[in-house]
Image (cartoon, rainbow, N blue to C red; front, side, top):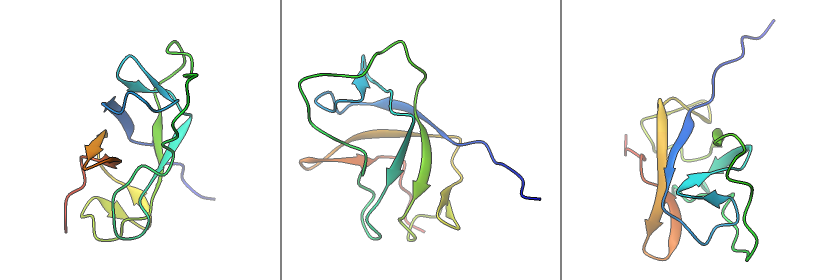
Length: 98
């Protein structure tokens, strides 16, 4: 039997044009981080409509950035992460090169 681990929460999101952003928080059910090399938020989507800010805050479902020291078997081991802009795209700002 497999043990279920608790997902890290997205504690803050500064990407206000994302459809899942509501009042500085991410309200997707879970996000995926990374394209293998860069800690981009793969769940980021621009839309005029935004998700309901009264829904639960997102967790990190998967992390594909194997160069992050917080990544273990494609899962994030941080307590929580922050998402914000890096250049012109949404990134996991908690990324720690390992």
